[in-house]
Length: 497
Figure 1: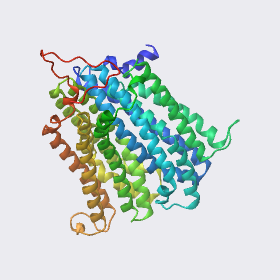
Figure 2: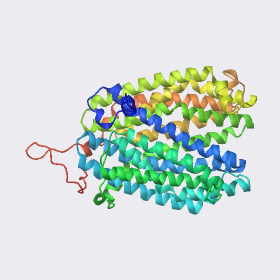
Figure 3: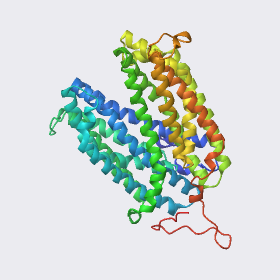
């Protein structure tokens, strides 16, 4: 068997999958698997910067850690905006409306890259004020500012690559973005030491070299992605004539994408808000939490992949008018995600100290980190259920519902429980442990995950996702003779119903 055949047996192309009529488990598996690999490659991207800057200087390593929350916040805004394009492309693809899918993709590219210019410009101007909020040492703050100025200047490229991944996923192709991501990771790994240390004819740029490598790699990936979409040979096609900004269509994209951006940024802000509570305790607690959160994010890669796969399958099946299949897809995804994450939770609970020790072998950090993991590990399955149904809501165009669950339940349940329980404001020592105690924070994590999963499942199974979703906008209306109206010609915007 050739290498190509071996790869083809593991990763299925868009043409090999029938998302609106084939086996749900098979389709979801082969749709989600490349997303898991893509996410792992993203981790490799971050590890490359950490590895080389760690060998350059401790201050540089601290500086990118300082800048990471802002990078995550900016990227979260971009990812939210791309959800609108992904959902519209998925629903038009399911409805067999290639012209409207292409128009949606073309408008989304223009809108997202423009948003990248705006966000990048604002970030570039106010980066000093934003970083000063963290109150770092002057040397670290200066390095972080140098790093972030280049990153914010390159946000249009980062947003551009993100929209390529989202649009291809909406069309049912997750393999092509995975291959492009592999190429950009290899390029970044090669450029990092060259630009950081100044190998060969290149000057020694230090932390700015890491930022330049990131922007150049993502910029190259964006160029490749746009070229692929212009050709239209894989997934979705974009047309230059459709890229003139359409205010009415942009309002539609904002209506869908703004809540998704709120959901993503809400998750990011929730973690940062919890960190403020964590910092009320000793350094080992802070360090243990930091390691635990990184482990937490790595373990949830399968759940995030299933989330995105469900989003695409829900959108395409709604477009095809197969609403019962939407319910079946979400239920199967919730069960599968629960089983996968619950199994990982068991392993995490058993080996929690060993997992923490891989990252930091300080006894006090191991003890605190292991305690954190053992509090949240039994709830992993519930968070898998939450992510599965969240993907279903977004695929149905109910992005505000998904955002509400993420922001309200995490912000108004996790944070109050974490603060009240950890600061001894109620006599929890009678029930569980002595307070003040950081275990109250871990209780907030565990409780909010379970509550959010139950709310998401009940909300989705109530059938509310069927009402007022994008089906009315995507499904072709009936003509005077009872026949479907023809699709608009490429280049003609679809009418708002």
